[in-house]
Image (cartoon, rainbow, N blue to C red; front, side, top):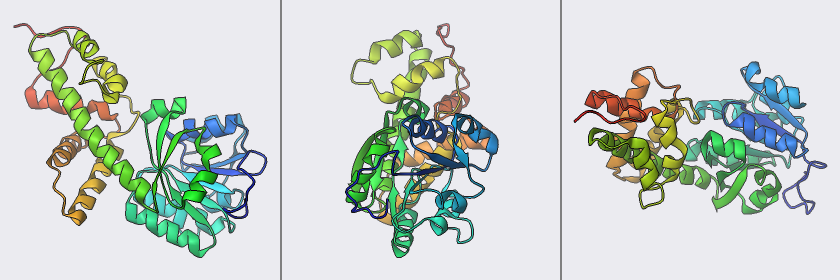
Length: 314
């Protein structure tokens, strides 16, 4: 994969893949590419989280730099912008330092738009390419290869990578460097208020004496139906707070949103409220739970615990 202009389509026979980050999302996403026949080299700071992929036949690299030296396209999906900077831009161990000219960095972490632009500029200075491609759809979307992918960068590079993206979900080209991140942040703003609305509605239904499970089923095909309801309604009722997306990472995302709003002179009070409520979860030591655990904050505020299949006595 010498340059983006090469006509030969990306395929397992001509493209070696590097994958950095094998957590809740990354492990499933990487596995799809391996099942499609791509040769994959992986790096993860916690080797045990990479073991399932190693058992499938992935190669292991000792650093992002070593990984990139064996790859044509390097994907990353890590926790925080500081992690992105470390694994991609660190001059002594980062992936860009090991990538050959013509190689591509694809960062799928939700991160700062300004960092995405910086990575693109740094990649271009070395004759490489960069795409910011954060995703939405949670752990189920990753497992089922139905993620929404928001891509920012050179459109021709994004098109060339579509055979890879197609194994992960649906790619949506949003514009130049950083635009994928802006799209994902807007997506997170919508999710935050939607989740809050879902949980407040469930709390109201419970306190009013409704069977909450019946209520959720009733509204699922009406105007109040949502992806959040479909993905998390039953999990909340079952007190299943396992992370498809960590509270810690969501607090990070909403914090980036608020910083960007400040830069834009934009007031979004719903976003600010949601961020504070999620921050309360983190303050209670619940940052490693899933975003549906927001119910715990509302329960504490109201001194009530929502029971799965019953209503409070009136």
